[in-house]
Amino acid sequence: MRLKGKTAIVTGAGSGFGAGIARRFASEGARVMVADINEAAARAVADEIGGLAQTVDVSRDASVAAMARAAFEAFGRLDILVNNAGVTHLPAAMEDVSEADFDRVLAVNAKSVYLTACHIVPHMKANRAGAILNIASTAGVSPRPRLNWYNASKGWVITATKAMAVELAPSGVRVNALNPVAGETPLLKSFMGEDTPEMRAKFLATIPLGRFSTPEDMGNTALFLCSDEASMITGVAMEVDGGRCI
Image 1: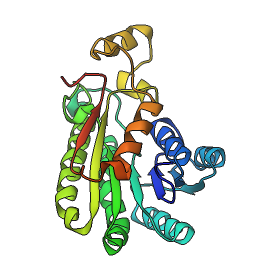
Image 2 (image 1 turned 90 degrees about the horizontal axis):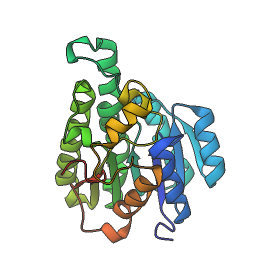
Image 3 (image 1 turned 90 degrees about the vertical axis):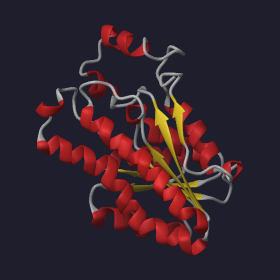
């Protein structure tokens, strides 16, 4: 029960890594707001873990503000924020990615971190405590070709995490990031372009441990970084990648 008495928001928690993190947090005693743009998915995970479902579009200020208000009203105090919601564009030459896809990737992957900071950081600063975890990617460290603007958005997340950590440390708020390798999530097919045995084999060949990351891998690592056990850790972008970035 390492998060007993703690409260958390996990965005993009209706599936994939976010759902794995929400389940792990709940299993360790946290009260969790399962936030997702897919209302039915958020409700299903929330019902499973005894959490609170919240529909949110993390790229829109009004929607993020409503999510923060709902969390404060339900919990009274927010201890943990996990910025997990993310999207990608399909593999393509950088100049062939549409402006609409570029704007969507940057809005969901990068602007969302800014918006949640605007609405939640003041609360954590007032409490002089809190843990923020941003889900970045190995793509921000070791970019793959034809995912250029997704790579760039995740590099932004890593730098933002370090900048946030330095600024918020005097207020007692820790900020870290996770860099997962491709995993068994709804985004996997988008990363590969097509989900075939051949494409999976090609991806797996770049991961020394020989498997994709799982929601459980992410949940376990997120639990550590957001728990009091990691009270001396801030500004870290931890790779959960089976050795891909070596």
